[in-house]
Length: 125
Image (cartoon, rainbow, N blue to C red):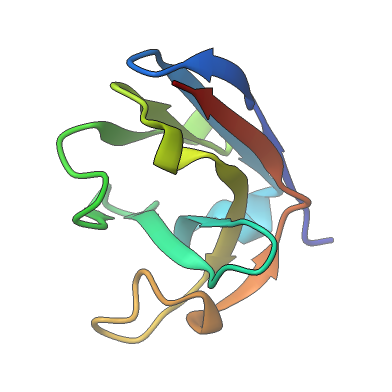
């Protein structure tokens, strides 16, 4: 059964940090890309970061490079998104997704098959 469960969202002030977690079923986690996306009502979905769980290669959107960091714990089938220096514009619902995107599609949500329910991140100024 495919399952993705996000956690770790919350409310912080600008400049603060949060760490999001995404726990996947073993089948979903193994040798797949795990991506983080964000979307607010009325806004387009944005790919934030992605990691290939089979080798740890990571990709980041320009808007978060240098502030967000992906990591993985293979024993727990878990991917983490460490978010530092948060800005009000980072406020969104954050979703974890799994899939096997084509080359250059690592941050394209349409390349991902499985999605979690989302966790809200709110950054106040």
